[in-house]
Length: 368
Figure 1: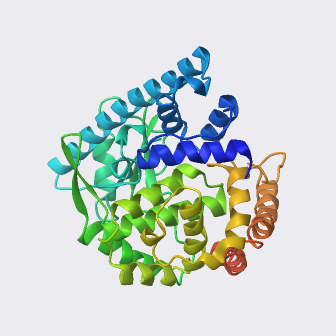
Figure 2 (figure 1 turned 45 degrees about the vertical axis):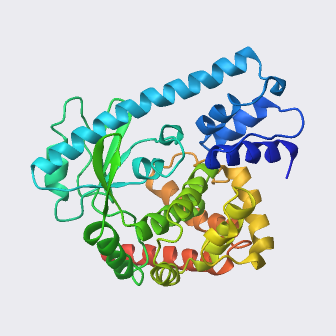
C-alpha cells in the first residue's frame, strides 16, 4: 500500500467512524482527491479535510475546491429529496408503497447522511404495480424520458434534468435460471413482506429489511465488480450497513442467502478488506475468514486500479452498434472478463462465463 493510499484510508476511516483525523507525513491533496473522486467518496474526504489542523498544508485553492464539492453535493441532495418525496407521495395516493433502494436508505447509516454521495433515486414497486407506477410518475412536473419501452430491463428511467429516477420492477438482473427463483423469494421477503419504515429528514420512507439491505448492498457491489468495476464508496456502504445492524441480523438467513446465491467466498474476501482497510471491527463482519488474505490482496489491487464504474480493460471496437461488431465484442468480452476474475475468484469466473455462453445459445435458439 503506497503512502497516498495509506493516507486516503486514514481519512476515509475518520469519515466513516466520525473519529479524529490522524495522518502521517505530508499530504498530497491532489492525489488524495483524485483517488477519492475515482472511488466516488470525495465528499467524505473533503469533509474530513476541513477538520484537519493547519499543519495539513491545505492550500486556499484546494480548500475552495473541497468546499465547492460539498456545496454542490448538498444542492444535488436537496433536488433528489424533492423528487423522492414527490414520487413517494404520488404513489401512496394511489395505493402503491415504493421501497427505496440504495442511496437514501444507505445514507441514513452514515454518521452524517448528507456526506454519502447519491447519484439517482431508485424506487422498487414490484412487477404488479410497475406499469401503473411508471404511468403515474411520468406525470410529475419536470419529468421526461427518452421514449424507451417500459417493459425493457429491470427498471424504467424517468429524468428530471440531469437527475434520474429509476422505477424498479425487480431489484437485480439474475441471468442464472437456477438462481432466479431463489432470488425472487429473497426479494419477496425483504422488499415486499418485511420492509422497514424509517424517517428521512422528517419524511417517512420504506427501505428493505435489515438482512436484505446488507445482502443486496453487497450483491450490488459484487456485480459492479464483475461488470464495470467497484469503488470504495460501495464497499463503505456495506461497512456502514454491517455496523449499523450489528446484533440485529438473522445470521442464519444471511448465511443461507449467501450460500444459495453462491457468493460466500466473495463475501468473505471483500469482508477481509472491510476490516483491514475500512476499519470494520472483525466481530461485526459475519463469517469473517482471515485465510482470505492472499485473495483479498489481489482483489485490493483490482479495486484500486478499476474504481467505481471505471474499469478500463474493456475491448475497444470500431462500431458497437453494428450487429457483427457487437457480436464479436460480446464474445471476446466474455473471455476478457473471465481472465480478469479467474485469478481472484476462479469458481465464480467459470460460472459466470459458462452461464453467459449458455444464455447466448438460449437466446439464439429462441430467435430461431
